Figure 1: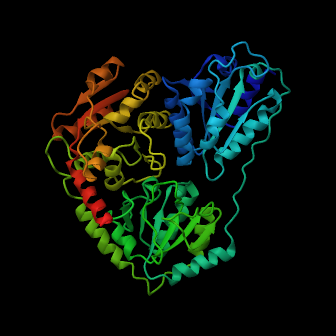
Figure 2: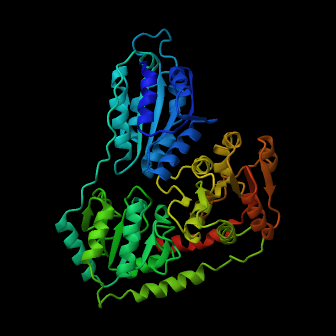
Figure 3: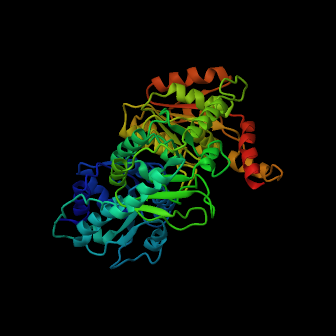
Length: 543
């Protein structure tokens, strides 16, 4: 069997149904093998788009997303998506081509040491040097990509290796069960929870697993311990739950940090220091119980005293069975804080001033979206507003990146969600800066016949950096730009566009676009003057 055929068979054997990519000359044997396979090839307009789509595919399914690029410049364009998947714990396999490694007549043309370039941003990175190695390398890549903590892996396939004759053989795909947490660690954790006075649960991204979510809800309901989430932990438990305090949009002095200050034990489920800290630990401060698949990395802002390491769902199940709600617990104070937070969250949500206030924007998006609607956020100032003000009702219904926090991923992520869930409403929320970084993927979305809305939150500048520039007392300099006519830009791709001129028009326009077929684009100007709320909180932190 030809090596490229064996590679495709190995991918099919792993359950791969879709590959996102931008093929090059060195991939053509593989592309021909794909043509005769069951795998769908989704061709994008930039390798970044392919990588972000593959990473989001992995994030939403738990199965490794696969993307394809050529050597040199094509592979280099996958570095940012690799870091996005690696830091965000999304299983993704990158396949890249390379010049022949046995004989080549092109010198060093387009050749980079791609494997070494990818090594810092992947869990596993290999060149396939013989066709017979393909099944083993593919099996190992998928295993490593999906084991906790998930992330990016990379395989390089030189052009001459892809053409080799091989002896076909496929390794069995076996699910590996994670080890249960140590019984002594669980007992110590149970004693710490029962001995606390004001325990509080923190939900991080690592809790976003189906069984973990169920066991976490069981713990919260049984023990009636209030909880809050990191940005990437949103939706693990329905945020309408009466014990939900909200999301830590900042690292300190956010509204709910009053609850963290009152707590004497934070039960930290699934958070690690790769995500921006939801709070800072300090010597002599509150205790933290770390429950995760791997030990905590010691960090100046995170150094838990207690750790339960192993399968998180199993650990939560054991703790729920062992811990009893204590009469001395004083959790009513968290209810008072929640009432104060809820009152403050009402500010500006009914404002009709124009450009639209962020609070009104978020409120209207939530009103328009069904419970299972998927929101894919790019990175910008709006992300903080959505993290704080947008309640998620189900897991994986708000896709944001608080690890690498790159711009340009919002649209491709929404496209992957729409491809996986064509029956659900999907919105890509992008700033004008982030949208233009991968706006060419509008053509891909239109060609694929996807149904999604692209919401461009326009402030004619790099708003988050401009806000921080202002907060630091610097002059407004170097962060503004002009934008194209986004409605005309959309029309050039065959996409319907709307421009909002009155705040009252936004919600009905969004609802109409969500119910219309195909790709819809909405240009909505935003007034970021409300960022002063966050500025005051940062100033309190620094003082």
